[in-house]
Length: 431
Image (cartoon, rainbow, N blue to C red; front, top):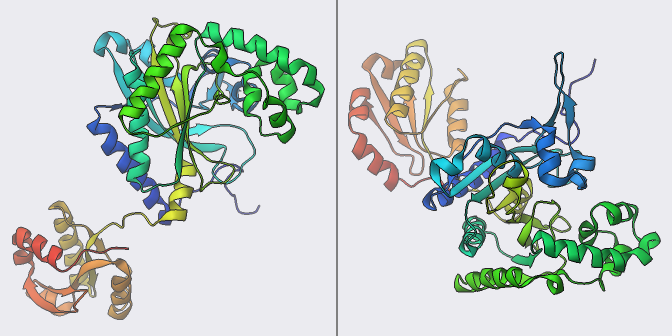
């Protein structure tokens, strides 16, 4: 039997790439924390009915892309690996009575999602999303706040060439009126549409608007615009959102063809796209979904949210810049049984008082350990040999200047504040 490999559509995130992921996670967590958003962690598999009811049976996600299987036991039931995060968050909101416990809920999540589709750059069958949801607010400020937070995260990461596109898909009543107008327009062209769009014409015609087929795109170019079918209340709300964005200095462009791919959206729909990603340009997408909580059996609850595809975001960051390098304070080299034992103890003690320390575990000659110390990026090197072990000392070598001196191990551990100042003035490592 050959070597077992990762399944198609999955990939390992190796240590040299993990720095980007940790950077994104850290930036997002910091920005969301100061905005008073709380993290929620939901299961990666749920009852299939949750996604059928929440996302919509006529969507591509439910119809083609879900990983679904039966449970074990005498009375099996259908289970699905989550294809997106919002439905699970809403299920948790209802089940745990979060509306009663805390009023408006500002929630965020991060984790793997699963969809069966052709793997390509930035799109895997197991992929990762950062998502944010506000449940319980019908205020247009919630929409603008979410977009501002997404913008802050992307800009803090250093991304440029970003564009915000917005649209209103109106109320369910507005959408029904528009749906009929769209069907009336497209029906004479049915045979000219791509096969997927022909099916969508019966099941989910609004999805035809974001078809990637060039012939279909040309046909929908002259299709009716949903903007012309918005009711008075929908128009008022959309104008409020636009005014909020203008007040925040956030530039946007109207895109009347933007509908998003899931049935639960109402009113605002938006995407943030990058010019640096080619065909897979969307790095963040979301909108309002005022009917989803009630659809899933909860109380009538207005809500708005977005999700970022982390794989696409990481690809962008890798193209544009290096992540902030982690600073390593000390690299510890040792040779000899007593020295190696003391080196382990010293490294552990330094870590416990807050220093970052890498202990060379190779047992190889000093020359090879020093070479690894040079490559480690450490500010200083701690050296223990037979002599240092016998005297309970350690040699402290500054990597930038190559200066070194011997110091008692207990003294090194006692002078924490001075040691921190010396590490700072010796120069911290930058990639």
